[in-house]
Image 1 (tube, rainbow, N blue to C red):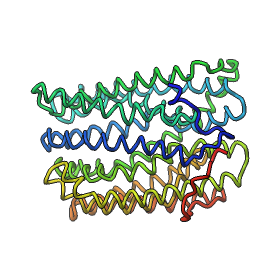
Image 2 (cartoon, helix red, strand yellow):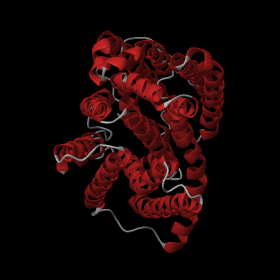
Image 3 (tube, rainbow, N blue to C red):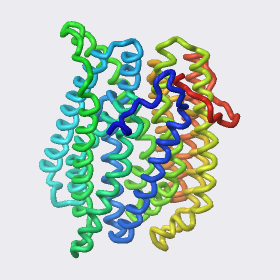
Image 4 (cartoon, helix red, strand yellow):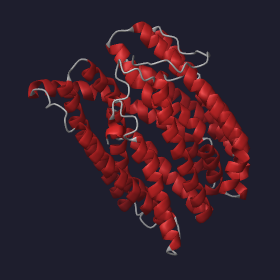
Length: 449
């Protein structure tokens, strides 16, 4: 527990954020390998229709799970590091308790509404109804995971949530599905959905115990009057961030959702396999996303503008060049990665090239989203995200009938280019900071001091 919760980037400790990102990336790479094995196993063990329906259910679950924390998973990295830097530990503890209650209430209400809708609509015996029930059952647990991940990032506990969420959870899913297969139980949508829900729930319980144990020594909250006022501040700051995190996830998964509505499940399966094969390159962005916000927040709280600018450039250089390397390596291995899913999945190789170009374009904007979040400029993120989603969905609807899954990939790549341009422009206009920096990353840089 100590190794997982050690604060790895307090000012003066001398450990670079690049090294923290390397730890996060290493864990994500391990997770990518595990998830890839899980997806290969499921693609081969399930029918194409069941596998495509499973992908649709998981996509809806992840996308809705991004909205359920109501922005508290993002506002945690804005408020908690600032409170701790200024010695307001009681406020940090109060934020944790209030945020957890809000997330639990919201996710349970939405899950209950989904169950009622499936029941009242007479969908319980249909594939759509089963997808709705799977999403409803997993939603509260995934919402808690997202909030706890935000709290861990806010405290600098970069490994605390990564190990349970990105390593233990896919292991549990693999073990559960393999156990069912060995027992002679067919891996249809209902069976795999049950395993996924059970795994997500178990990891949520483990994660909650770990976070509560790490926070058990936190000081008592501030006085009731001060806390009441802070609650309104937290809500007002968090609710717009709900749109930020939700729009970001919707941008990531909108192509799969559009494909699911326009093409057969087998085509969705091929597209998803191609996107999953690129997960190594995708995790580069999220590795630096995981560690950058805290450094931005501390530099901003200390009003150190030169340090903030250097932090922005450093994260952009690292994000961009490591994304280029990861995309190149993944594309070289692409034919073998796709063949692992099955012979028919090789049709997704062109999709990998198109999506890879989009990932490189996204890397040019570095960690602009986290910078805008920690400085309270969430409106710019929402505008960039909604514009990108509109282009993505619009282009996909136009191109899919003519070019199939390649059309969806082109729409997604074009949306990433538009998003990067708008984010860089927003940072320059609102903060007078530049984002794009193509120099090689420095191993000695530390964003938090």
